[in-house]
Image 1 (tube, helix red, strand yellow):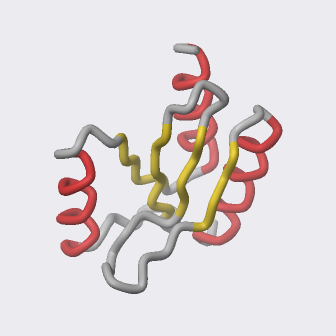
Image 2 (tube, rainbow, N blue to C red):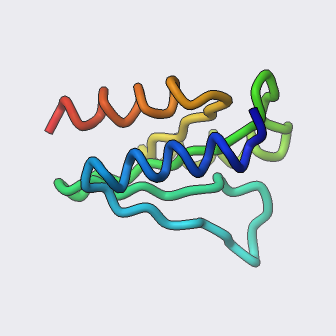
Length: 94
């Protein structure tokens, strides 16, 4: 499945669960994750979407680690069930 299809399905699912979903871009910083998700309790996390079987690039991995170093959750997702599972898991802690 293509990245855009995985992203669309996971984002639609998140919205149905009550999360805010933003396309995240940063003109001054390359390799930021694709989407920012905001849960109803204010918890924020990011997802980098990839086509099935693809991995994050080296610059993306560095940026993800930078964010994680500041206590921000970042996930790399290459399939719809995994993306939905992350949302379900995080929503379960609310």
